Length: 317
Image 1: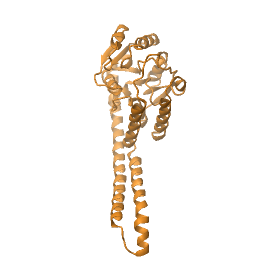
Image 2: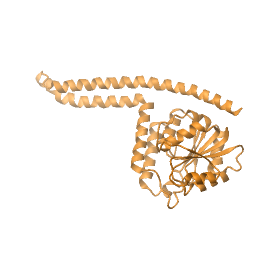
Image 3: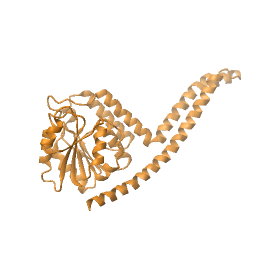
Image 4: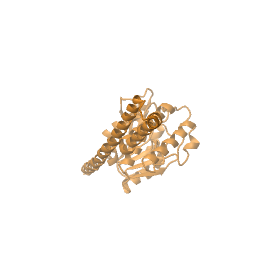
């Protein structure tokens, strides 16, 4: 079991991976215990793997394309007291590693978030839609999931053993960071923000992110997790929409003419409104049932957390 595992997911980062590994090695030279740098290559077509091996990293591969798939593999295979995850594009300062690890080890934090948005991100990042998207995602998650994570989509994080071994990786792409933030919030795990200095990619290095397609995936992930973890509110809103639509058609088309003539002249509209009301009732009670299931899942998670803690103590011996 490593004392510290530095996890670097990579795809065609030959230009920067050597410097990232060297910076990490320099940053952890005074960190006690065994530190191992793992580079997980995701089908690179350049010299990323060769350079990483030359610099002394442990190099492994993940064939399934996508950052989420790489992180799933890393979390399964690596056992450590604490973990650092950062990208191989040299946008994150490795000198912050000891401070972030200290929070994991000495303050028992489950996840430390490298906060770019409170420092230099909006000045360094030259992609305005990325800046706008980060603001939207941060507001929506902090609003809907009641937390204070300042940088939802940062790729620079520290983790405890318990977080890594209980985090269910469902995403396959860059929406994985959003999933991490939401999962930590809904399970009441101890999260700390850590201010870092962000720097944009060096000249000639290209981002793998697609602003619009990856942005839509992130928003879809937020909506999906909101539905899964707040089903009572989600399905109550759907029920309310059904009732509003039913009322909008029923009163002017069916009820008002009935008061004037005493006859129901629009039976099709009346039937549709009846079905909408039934759908509203079903949606409302579905939310109640799913809310109970979510409560049970949270109880099961706490028991699973105890099992992982026992495994952690066993590996330390």
